[in-house]
Image (tube, rainbow, N blue to C red):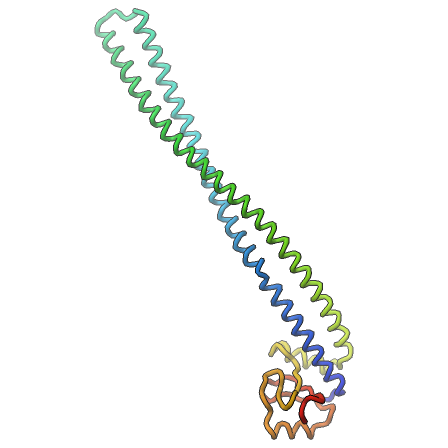
Length: 246
């Protein structure tokens, strides 16, 4: 392949800009905020499940407490009714009187047992409500931190996008001065090796950092200035400059 020496030198400018673009792409992928955002988002997702579970438990306990309190009230009402019958003197039979007194005592014991159940449920409900409050507070704190991180990410991405746009603009100006076949070869090599062209500097390829042999240097010296050369080691386009040491 033939190409004017100046067009070949433009490849070095292109390679430098492509390195800038690669670094910007790497920065975009590896912003520290991205990992933190992913971690916080995952924690928020787990918290959503935990909050639902805690709220469900608290709701179940609230219903359980209401039922237990209703049972206490029913027993209390029955005990009060029996106590009024006893106090009214309506029961005259000794046997009926004994049975009524026994029932009242049993109802009081039942009421006491049910009140203990209510207290136990209340303690569990209080713990469940506290857990809901704790998880909700943590969710709020993480959400606020996530919003701050997303804002920092957006600022960083905006700066990267601006640099990227400027570099691509300069790249377009450079590629316009490079012959299509030379540019196509450069792009193909860039896809394969990351860098499509490198300078021959003081007898060393700056792409693979390998010093060329005497035979290779003699071959390059004998080549026409417009001959497009390739490094025998890394196969990148080898661009000659006054610093090549030929």
